[in-house]
Structure formats: structure tokens, C-alpha cells
Amino acid sequence: MGEHHEHDPHDAAPAHGRPLRLGIGGPVGSGKTALTAALCRALRGELEVAVVTNDIYTTEDADFLRREAVLPDDRITAVRTGACPHTAIRDDISANLDAVEALQARHPGLDLVIVESGGDNLTALFSRGLADRQIFVLDVAGGDDVPRKGGLGVAAADLLVINKTDLAPLVGSDLAVMGRDAAKVRDGKPVAFTSLREQPGAPEVAGWVRDALRTW
Ligand SMILES: Nc1nc2c(ncn2[C@@H]2O[C@H](COP(=O)(O)OP(=O)(O)OP(=O)(O)O)[C@@H](O)[C@H]2O)c(=O)[nH]1
Ligand SMILES: [Mg+2]
Image (cartoon, rainbow, N blue to C red):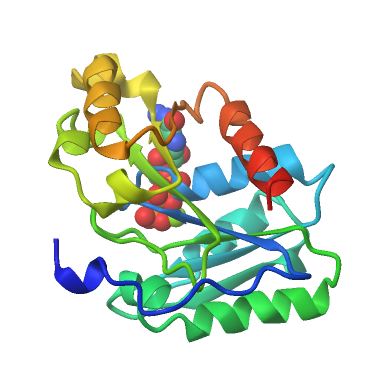
């Protein structure tokens, strides 16, 4: 765990009169885009939602969300991060802040902007200057020892999501072990188990986001 990952280079942004910014981070392929799609579908009827995606070289994730029509096209923006996705959510957050502000200018009544990080390692955390709340997504196929290995994402995210529970029997991952190891490093912060394959609406996570907005 590099030291510069622990120091947040930006102050939390003033909250007044703007949408909640929710960061979704986690390793490559864990289900960040699938969770983003689920939250858009679950919340778009009751909230004004927009999305910023981060990809290294492409606009793949934004293209997927547009194809799935989870939101109107002009509520989805892609940021290309180059080689270092964690830099764009942590150190130099300007491209993401510009994307959020452009969405706010286009849609003045926004309640929630979801920022999906590019897939990264276990230490990648959003700066509080970009994300007011953040979810870290792991999947069971990455191995049930991942929560034990710790890392800032697992330990410090406001919500830890352990996704693809449908695959647990196939890959031999023990969900109880994952939950117990995560609880040890999370100091009482919540953990949600999801299968976006079996429950594409992610009701538990959507409920957590509603609560986050109520206390915002
Ligand atoms: N079996 C199963 N597959 C899932 C689940 N959630 C997502 N997937 C699949 O896992 C693959 C990766 O999901 P994405 O949502 O693209 O993952 P991501 O974290 O956004 O990936 P990157 O942005 O490339 O880092 C896709 O093929 C999804 O359909 C789940 O709960 N169960
Ligand atoms: Mg993605």
C-alpha cells in the first residue's frame, strides 16, 4: 500500500446546492458497470441521475450503458484516463470534475452523479474532492482471500460490495469467510453481497444509496 494512497490530496468539496457524487471503484471486471446500470434502473424513476465512466483507452463502459439505455444518452459521459485510472480519481481529478460539472450544467436538477472508476488494484480509492461517498466492488471469482489481503478499497470504502455470489459454488469461494475478513478491517462499515446476474436491480445497494442521499 503506497503512502501517497493514504494521503488525500484534495479537501472534500462543499456540499451546498449540488448532486451527491457517488464513486464506484474496484478491480477489473468485478461488476462496476453492471452495478452502475443496476443503480440507474433502480433509481431513475425517483431521482435525477447522471453517470461519468472512466476507461483507460476506450469509451467502452459509457457505450455499454448507452446501449442498455439505462439513462438518456446525454446523461452519460466518458472520461479517458490513459494508463493510470487511480490517478484520475485520486490525484488529478480535474477531468472527472469537468465531466461532472458539464452534466450539472446540462441537467440543473441532478440529485446523483455516479462516477465509475477504471478497473484498478485494491488500493485505488476516490479522493473526497471527487466522491462524497464511495462503493468498492469485489467479486467472488477473484478469490475468497481478497478481503483478508486488505487494501484501502476494502477497508475504507463507505460500502463494500461483494458481487457475483452466483459464482461462489463454481469457484469454491466461501462467502462467510469473505464477510468475516472484510468486517475485521472495516470498523463496522457495511458490506453487501450481490449477484447482479440473479438480482439485476441490486435492491440492497439501491437502498444504501437512498439512505446516503437522505443524510446528504
Ligand atoms: N455471473 C455473474 N456475472 C456478473 C455479475 N456481475 C457482473 N457480471 C459480469 O462480469 C463481467 C464484468 O462486468 P462489468 O460490470 O463490465 O465489470 P467492471 O468492473 O465494470 O469491469 P471494468 O470496467 O472493465 O473494470 C460482465 O460480463 C458482466 O456481465 C454477477 O453478479 N454474476
Ligand atoms: Mg466497467
